[in-house]
Amino acid sequence: MPAPTRFLSCDWGTSSFRLKLVELPGLRVLAQAESDEGNAATFAAWQQSGQPAGQRVAFYQGILTKHLRTLEQQQGTSLHDVPLVVSGMASSTIGMRELPYKPLPFATDGSDLTTQLFAPSAAFPYSLLLISGVKTADDVMRGEEVQLVGCHFATSDQEQLFLHPGTHCKHVRVRGGQAVALETYMTGEFFALLSSKSILAASVKAGGELSTGAHRQAFERGVRDSTQANLLHNAFRVRTNDLFDKLSKPANSYYLSGILIGAELSTFPADYAGHIVVAGEPHLLEHYAAALELLGISARAASVTLKGAEEVTLRGQAAVLAHAWPTHQP
Image (cartoon, rainbow, N blue to C red; front, side, top):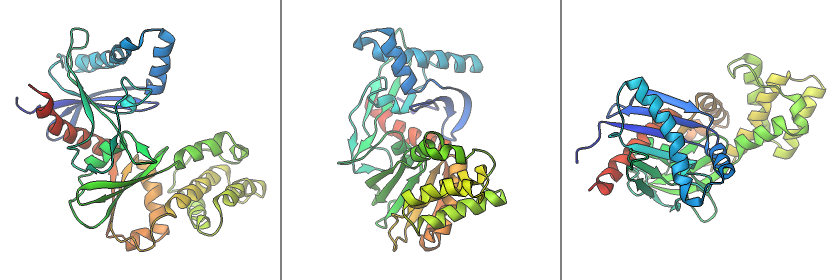
């Protein structure tokens, strides 16, 4: 069977749903739809529906169908013959079907990730390829493994590092064409909790850009302070910065970001000199690039490359599809 010339990309996270029609091989996005129907909300809706366990996949496919029809309306044609690739939390305990994690190591070309094909049916006339996550003895990730594949790491004996900033930041070591080690840091979640649920909430305010002078200075001060004192002590400085009028609330938010990102990056080996690829949303790329430079990591690394989350997600899904398509087809 010939390789597909288009595919449907679904990046289905915990809190968000993104669906795109993508042209191959150039990865041009032809149509797209998104919503806040993430897996958490969809799982809650399925539980409330009272449907039997056997209807769970069909319930999730109903969400997909609604958005697939939106894309078909945009294109003015049926997409039944276009393979659908789903990554993220859709293969988790709150997803359409839980798939086992692929134990590390895994191939960075995406050839050995765990996948499951759902064949077309009368109710859901699309071929759906569901991609599972990966695990170590004490860590996991779902979705980021596809983005790592999309970074196209060189096959080299020199260690390389994949860094994915976000709610749960991932550091993955790559060597010899294999992802060999994984560490997760709850940097983004700690920022959200401290800035909205703790005593620090009254001392910070979201807004502005990192490039603004006062914001940049506050962020850099936070990164530097992360190397001088314990994180728990630095966190209380967010409160005193506000009490003593040292920083505005927006600048203080950047200070908080700086101490958290600095604490995360403090685990970098002092002698690390390999290549680093940072993949994520634009504002996080800016924060991490600044912190890596301030901490001297960029200067000793062979290179630091920044890649957008959408680009590497599409490239990763396309790579997994290319390997899985011949396997799953008759």
